[in-house]
Amino acid sequence: MIPSSIATLVAFVLLIAPGLVADLEAGRHRAGAKETTFRELSRTVLFSLGCSGAAALIVVLSLILFRVAGPAQFHQVVTDAAYRTEHALGILGALLATSVAGCVMAWAIQRLRYRKIPLLQQISAWRQVMREDIAKGQDPYARVRLSSGYSYYGVVVWYTDSIEADGRELVLTQPMYIQAPDSIEVQSVPAEWPQLVLRGNDIQALFVRAVPRSAVTPAIGAPQGEASSSLPQQPKDEGAA
Image (cartoon, rainbow, N blue to C red; front, top):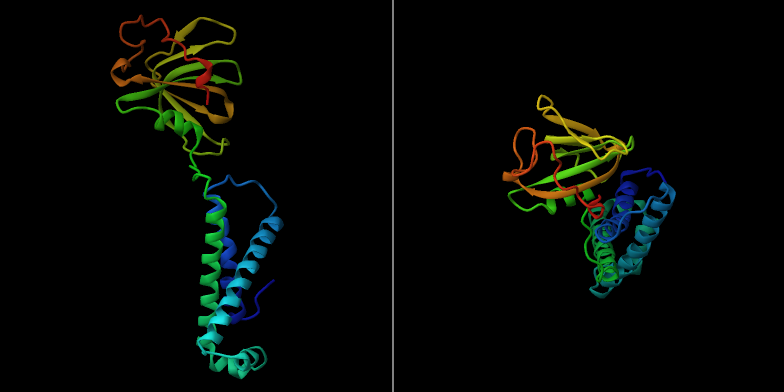
């Protein structure tokens, strides 16, 4: 539907608002599933019409109850263009009241519907294991296994904080190690290569553990007390993200 006048546009925006409020409130409690534009629009419009219809009934009954308007005035609003022009502010106020009541109704319905479901936290698994689960004074130390079979070890200094896996990047810094496919030998990455950038699309598995910040030397080497040619204890697979 394409609005053909300012009044129609205002009415369309006000009466569609409850569906948008319902979607926003529902999105705080459940993960959004992919759906077609037609289905999303249909759901929003139907929800809006239901809430707006109930809200309009409440507004009309209130106007009649408080003798602000009666059946004759409602008939003139529908049939008399001059009357609509003369009472444009009053009509706009009634539409606004209907929209507000519809939005409140939509919000209340969704709050009641999802009252036992906690709010969703829209954060990625990368952020959870490499920031939220890392205590103060510690750094995330990662083993990154690529689709090529190679594994890289190092301190995570930066990553793309995005839920979408496409286009994410991960940056490791020294001390870093590299392990070839099907090999138990691990080699240190030379100090002249202080950082390594890995594409998220190339990562097959990511293992993360927290290490004390003081235990990681700025140059090549294992945590203090271990030989630089040896690898810190490999993280277990249950830490994969």
